[in-house]
Image (cartoon, rainbow, N blue to C red; front, side, top):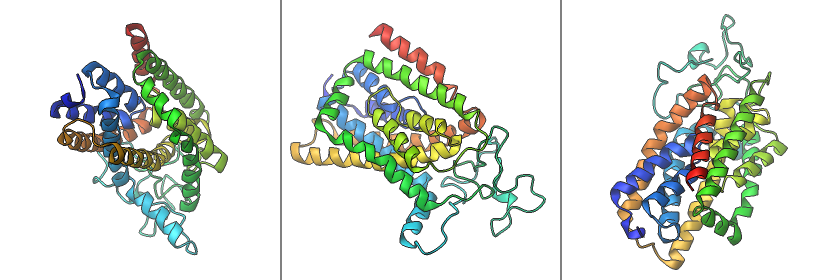
Length: 335
């Protein structure tokens, strides 16, 4: 099957797959590469461009979900003379938390000024029994947790993005496209992701007081983990969340940093792809299929992101390890 065979149905299916796999730490690029291989969609004839488009759909989900954090960072940059330390704790973009989310500390536990009442069972700066920073249902630090400096978070994001400059080199892009054609390489990368998640969960359960924002060297190391994740099969969210947890961040702060770190990464890849399309022309595929893939990946991504944050609070990342091990071994066995 060639690029013109990217039907609307296949585009919607791949968009949904991207929406699920981008946020769950199971590698969206690996799943897309395998699915496109099964469907016969060539990476060099539209498949690779389509991957960038559906990644942009999940990027929009991140921008909307973490918009309060992004606004706080912007205020910290534009008004450096003002105290802008408390990250937002407003309800998330999609309404109130589902009733089954075990909130550790919520806005209801604070007074109108954001302070924890004296009789509150969750005083400022405390952590849950597993040693994780209290957070609301949307992955942000709750108003009862220790303050987070927005400018420190911005610095960490800048440092974490720097390693991606290496991905701009044409040989690196060629390596990624070539890897999409070799299922065995993808299978090995699935196993690598599983190992990273297992180690991170082991490390975070031994921590006493996890951090909310990585320090500069930690941010660079998390950025290196994101660089490795350009290979299909190594999850971007999985590698960065695992690296952040292993370096001392709690589960939800690690997820927040991971998804905020995805913004410049996906923006850069999308811009690079757009420039390439302007130079060489659109791939021989129905433009409507790209629009459908984008919209489906966005809608599914919105729902999946919320589900992931619930899972992080309840069980962590360990449940994804056996899935990745089984999938990786199956890909290796089947070729």
